Each structure stands twice: as C-alpha cells, then as structure tokens.
Length: 170
Image (tube, rainbow, N blue to C red; front, top):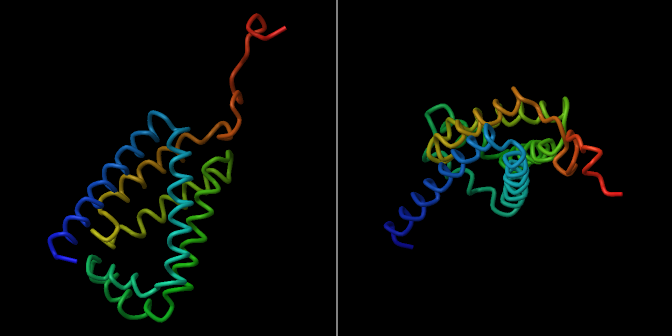
C-alpha cells in the first residue's frame, strides 16, 4: 500500500473519529438517550474488536507506540508486549461493562459513566493513535451523563412520562 494512501486512510479515520466524538459529546448534552444508545453500541463494538484483535493479531497494538507520549511508548514497547493479549482482553471486558451500563439507570449507570471517563482519559496519552482529542470529547460526554444520571432504561418507552386520562384508549 502506498504511503499516500496509508496517510489518507489514517487522516480520514482520524477526522471521522473526532467528528463522531464531538457529535456524541453534544448528544450527551442535548439528546442523552440517543447518546447512551450510541455509546452502548460504540463500546460494545470496541469490546468485540479489541477482544478479537487481541486473540488473533496482538502484535498490532505495538503500533500505537508510534503515536504515544514517551511514558506510554516505553510501556507499549517494553512490559506491555509479553502481556498484550491478557491486557487487551481486560480492557475489552471493561469496554463491554461500559456498553452494558449505558442502557441502565442508578448506580450501575453512574459507575459505567465513571468507567467511561477513566477509560477515555487513560488512552489520551496514545495521542493520534487514540484520535486525540476525540477521547477528551468522550470523557466530557460521560461526565455530562454522570452529572445528570439516567432516569429511565433505554428500552422503556413510556417510563417517566405521565399519560393523561383523556388520552388513554378506552
């Protein structure tokens, strides 16, 4: 693959990731139900992708060292390399728990938001490899959802809404 094409794909993916993160952050403020649904899908997909990749081609994670800040670069190329698969599988499990928490309410939802913030901040030092500053936007979105916790489950259509007697079917 040519360098131009590789760079083109990278920058298109990078731009799309940042645009999606900005839109998700805005949705956390204006349309939290949509944001929760999208975050559940995103983190569910990320969990599946990371688990699959960690098992089938764990060596690709060392490529993130090219974009990471100095301390993360040292970790990726040193202690991380022999434990890549179990480490990434642990991350994937955390991403799955975040995905599962997004449709919920109460403490489980808040814990998922907190985990989303921690995860987003933890990968910031991966720099361009984590589409910096996209993860900062996601962290801010999770913070907004954490501040204003979910008052209903995603799959409950009329939860929290009052139905007026004169509008009910006979």
